[in-house]
Amino acid sequence: MFVDFLRKNVVVAGVLAFLRIYIGYQWMTAGWGKITGGTFDAGGFIQGAIGKATEEHPTVQGWWAAFLEKVALPGADLFTFLVMWGEFLVGIALILGIFTNFAALMGILMNFAFLFSGTISTNGQMILLTLFLLVAGYNAGRFGIDRYVIPLVRKIAKYKTKNYTKTAELH
Image (cartoon, rainbow, N blue to C red; front, top):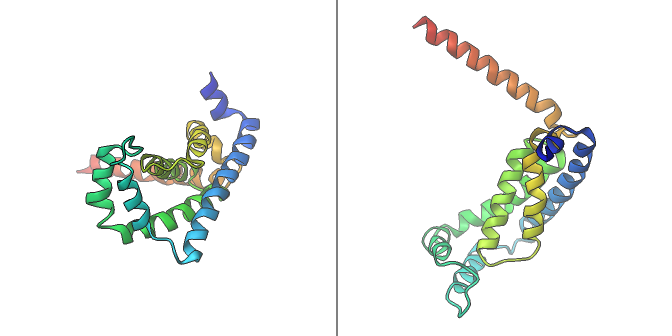
């Protein structure tokens, strides 16, 4: 019942638009600050997170520290690029309401990665708000570009599926 309310109510779509724009602004400004600041390096953040796994009361789990040490740290340049531009692009997509669910999913993925790395900040709040966007589905982007893009994507996907089925039947 509550899920249907989130997914279908037009008034809720308006509230979700405000949440979406707020979260998008947070992501966009964080990413833009890293892009234009010129000093962001994920390597330092990753090393700090690995160090938090060896404390007396670790805030980073061993399995996550192993991932950071074996995968993320050697690829710190790539992760620097992904974090800067990922934050910025997730923010832009949420503000505009284009591919809202995918942007929200990528945002929540980054939030969990930051939480797993021992950073608290506003990540918990952003995860909670983003969950509403994800559960709401299409309604979260109803007052955004998704209103026009999603029906077009569905139409194209239906057309390609229909043509694929016809081609398969011919063979």
